[in-house]
Structure formats: C-alpha cells, structure tokens
Image (cartoon, rainbow, N blue to C red; front, side, top):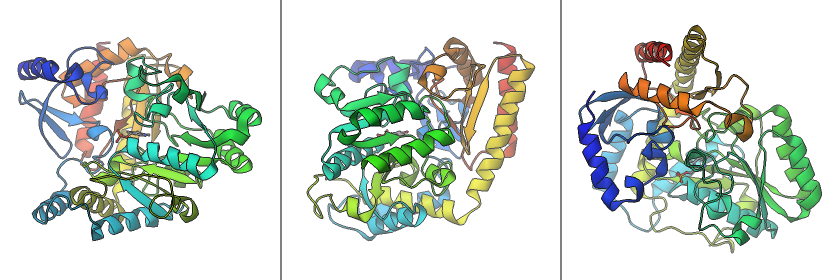
Length: 427
Ligand SMILES: *Cc1c(COP(=O)(O)O)cnc(C)c1O
C-alpha cells in the first residue's frame, strides 16, 4: 500500500501549519509515523489521496454515526446551500434543532446552539459560575472537554496522547479554580465537597468516557455525582458532546437514569458540520444573554448549513432502527475482537457502550486514568499500523474510542475481525 502522496502532502502541510494539522488528534502522535490525507469518504469508507480505501472506525471522531454522505443529510445540505450559507439572523431550523434536542433529552428544557463542543463546555462552565456565584469547577483526570483553558488540566484525548496534562499558556490562576479528581472514585468526590463544597460551581464529567479510551462510570460514582452536587448546590454538567445521540438517542444520561443540571452536546448533532449545544433547566438557561446577564454569543452560531445537517441526522436516528442495528454490529465487533485477542494470547480488556468501544492492551479492567495509562501503547501502535495496512482505519491512539456507524455492514464487521485476527497473530 503506497502512501507517497500523503507523505508529500504532510511535508507541505508542515511548512504552513503547526505539526501539519489543525487538530493534534489527526497527527498520529500516539502511534508514531505520519498521518494520511483524505480525498473523500463514502458510507463506511475513507479514501486517501493515494487512492487507498479504509473502513472508517473514527467517523470524524464521533459525528458520522450514519456514515459518510447519507442521502438524507446530503439532500438537506443541498437544499440549504441554495438558500444562503449564513444570515446572522434567526431561522426556523435553529428552533427545529432545539426542539429535537429538547424532545430527546428530558433534562434539557432550553438549549443554546454554538459551533463546537469546546464552546459548549466553555459556556456551560461560565453559566455554572454565573448562576451559582462560585468559582471552583471539578473535573476528572482523563476526561476531555475540549480546549477550554480551565479544563485543560489533566485532560484526556490528544492532551493525554501528547503528554501535556497542563498546556503552556494556561495560567496558574486559571488552573487554580479547577479541581481534578480521579474518575470512578466516589470517596475522593465526597472528600472534595467536604473541603470546598461551598465554593463549587459545578462538576463536569463524561457520562461514558471516550477520551482516555472507553471507560464506564460505576453506579456508586454516578450516584455520588448527582447526590453531592445537589446537596451542596453545585451544578452537575454532563458532557455528552461524544455520547449524546451516540450511545442512545436520549444520551448516556438516559442509560444511567441521571438528570444533570446542564448537558453539553456536539459531534452527532451537527451531522458532520460544526455544531455544539448546551442546555438544561429553563431557570438556569435564562441566565444567558439576552434573557439574563451571562454573556455568550457567536457570529455563525446556529448556522443554516450546520442546523440542516443536524436536523436531518437526528430525524434519521429518531425514525429508524439505527440504535438496534448499531448495538448488533457493535456487539459482534466487540465479541470478534475479544475472541481474536484471546486466540493470540494477547492481554486485553474491552470496554463498550453501544457503538463506542476500546480494546485496551491491558489485562486489568480500566476504570480511571491511572489504569488506562498502564496499557501497552507500543503494542497498540503496532496493532494500529497492522490494521491500517489491512484497510482498517482505527483511532490513532490507545486513548480514543472507536465508533461504528449504521453504514458498516455485517460483512464489513466480519472482515474487520478477520483483519484483527491476522494482525494480532503478528504482534
Ligand atoms: C470532542 C469533545 C469535546 C470537544 O468538542 P470539539 O467540537 O472538538 O470542540 C468536548 N467534550 C467531549 C466529551 C468530547 O468528546
């Protein structure tokens, strides 16, 4: 498989962009080597500029739950583009997308649309501080909430891959108002609230972590999150940018029976275009300008192309059997990967919720950042390249989840398992 065109493209890109990319997760830093440049995508396939085809298991890191170029999304975009690409004035599509979100997620009564997941979490944090009048935000090690200054402390995703738990440029003053605790540790959370509970504006968490690989919260941890925030008058902020409309139509909070105060969304709700959202109880959301005094704005927020793609995506998800299909194909993929790893006697543990999963090269259960970090990352790198050579595009880091789309056929899932069996045999 030749990747000469990508090699040339990367050296050209490196001359004009830092590291040759516009987001570090794309740079293959977690597995070594150079990224491949994509020419186009169709259904479950990515095609690179050398003409190689790959089964895509990153789906733009989550958004492409229907695969690439779904006819309903393409039609919605084609119609929208003829009506103009941005007005800076209200549209019906914004209300329609908001209504779809509110209908799906019962804890959300009002919602504000923004342009990315980062903007959603940044704004939710500002709102939590504005609403409570308190400074401290609690987050968990290995959880990633976008590149918000105050949340770039012990962050997962490419921050974990690159080993930059604290980014230069984030001041001590900013970091001081963020308290980082271990995930899945109710006692640590209780101790923190006992110490500084009266100063805590909110607790932000991933309801299924995707950004240190897939990690599932325990029942005790979930209970402590809701119980302690309610008791101390802090807001519980459920970051569903990755999980919303992914693990279930109603989000991970519906799987856990949780009712957070604020929810952040992104990825799937934009259907592959830049969208984020944050929402919650009306009495909290009405603190946002112009209803209230907490400032938040956006020139392109609620953009007509992005909302059209989002509406089309959510309607297909709502009106089809997408989630039962995703559950079937994802559970088969998980089962096949585990069987293949067992056959090759490779120590592993697999975590999965719906169509997001991670095969950790780690014999122990992974429950937090400390256990995730014990994974055999050099072995993951070999696995990644072995799969790429066999036409399967996996996340380029042990600490990212893979995503299955509705475009992946049973046959493609089986060929992926066969490729993994072959690759494991060579590790
Ligand atoms: C991707 C992600 C974000 C950031 O979203 P961007 O659109 O990349 O800014 C925030 N939180 C979680 C849980 C994410 O997975």
